[in-house]
Structures are given as structure tokens and as C-alpha cells.
Length: 210
Image 1 (cartoon, rainbow, N blue to C red):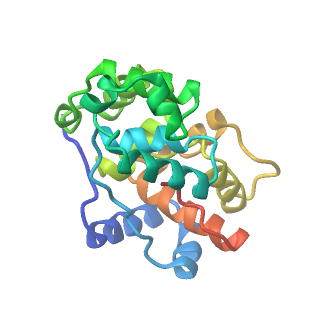
Image 2: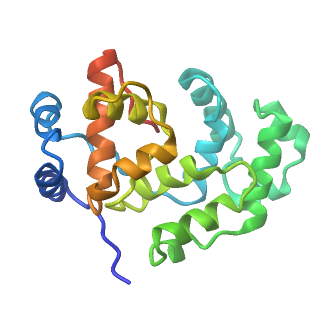
């Protein structure tokens, strides 16, 4: 199995050029938004935990709770395993978020092993954790594992930007968008990054998650 990644801005540029050859409509977007930031992160337990903490919260609220957890040294599996639910609640975690994070601890994911798994194997491994859906798993593929062929079809910003790009009458469902963009493979991560940037241009705000 060959795992394709995008490690550098140069590789992203090459992927975008290949994408434009397949879907020329991206050329105009690329001219407008330029080369997107790869926004890579180190991944691992802490990255996923932070993503779970931030679910359905404003950026400011999520950052505040995360800082409290960091200050209390409650961001590792060992420390969380030792902590009571009350101790986690005291840092701002809801009962539901506490359950999610304990599930992440209990699954004891081998994060190094993820690097050698296929995209779907990674998604299956991560979504086995309570509180991690496909979107979160795809963000991990894109930004932590640097995978080259991930289109986040459940992402609102990507659906809106794709509707504009493809001239659709209405916002596509994830299934419709997946079907419409199969031919973008194996360059769909470049497409995701361009579509997020395009959405930001359309709405005059930052759209890229994490």
C-alpha cells in the first residue's frame, strides 16, 4: 500500500497544479487565494483531546477550557486516568466531554501505527472512540498525518464553496459531493484546502478548522 502525503508547500503546489489539470475551475480560485497554509500539527493523544474539548464551543471558550486543563496538567492519558470526574468538571469539561475523553484514554490508540494505516483504517480506528466522528478523523488525516487525498464532504464550508465552484443550484449532500468529486482523487486534500480558503474569501472570514 502506497500512502501519499503532502509534507511541504512545494508538494502542495504540485498537487494543486495536478488538481487544476483535472478540474480547471480551481485555477481561478487559486489565483484569488494563493497557496493555502498546510496547518500541520504534531497529532497524538493531546491533539485529539483538544479537538474533542472544542466540539460545539466557540474558539474562545474552547481555548479557555484547554488552558485550564493544561495548567492543571490534565492532558495526558495517565493524568486523566487518575483524575476524578469532579476534577475534570472543575476545569470546565461537561459530563459528556468527560465521557468522550475517557473513551479516548480507554482505546489506548497507537498513534505511531496510524502513520502506516490506510485512510479508511485510520478513520475506523479513530471513530471507534465515543465522541469522534468521521469529520474529526478526517481533520486528523489532513493536518496530523498530512494525507494527500482527503475531501471533508461533511464540512459546511467545503459544501458551500463546492456549490459555488461547481455552479450547483443548492448545497450538495455529503454523498452528492463525494460522487461529484471522485475524479479529483488523488489530490482531494489540495481541493479541501483551496475550498476552505475560497469559502473564507466568499464570507470574508477564516474557515479552516483547528
